[in-house]
Length: 199
Image 1 (cartoon, rainbow, N blue to C red):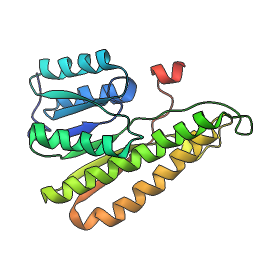
Image 2 (image 1 turned 45 degrees about the horizontal axis):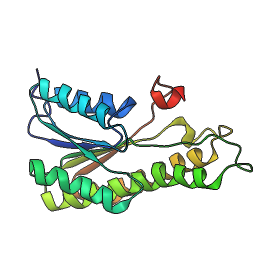
Image 3 (image 1 turned 180 degrees about the horizontal axis):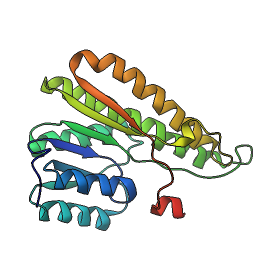
């Protein structure tokens, strides 16, 4: 049964079919939020998240979008507004990481890591901010970072670079949005047993 803590709010969560995103989406749904569950390729898992949220007594939809595509992310935010009338919370969680020594790295994988992990986060923060400004109400944006932002772990240069960049992005966005009462928080989880980490 959903609680009342987030009742009346609408949340978009990227990468919500697996791992941290999945747990976040379910928790927000159980706290009463209506949730837009974003996924790229794990549709069945995304539907399971939607079903669990709906079983708790609130509403959810799934929306396919590759966060490295700016138009797709803008459509994701538009879907929240179209379905639920507004956007109050956005969680930038989706990430990708090819692990190779940078001087041997396949550049397609290197760029994909940056496109998803850095640009994907920026596209969501930007689109969500624009919608929240239209709402005219306080909003909350959470950017999931990592210790990779400040620990130069080997075989992960693209991911390290991307996580460091989104921390500066989030801090800058916070200073620009504070007067509009839109809060931005950075979240740095340590190692968590997720499908991505197992890979």
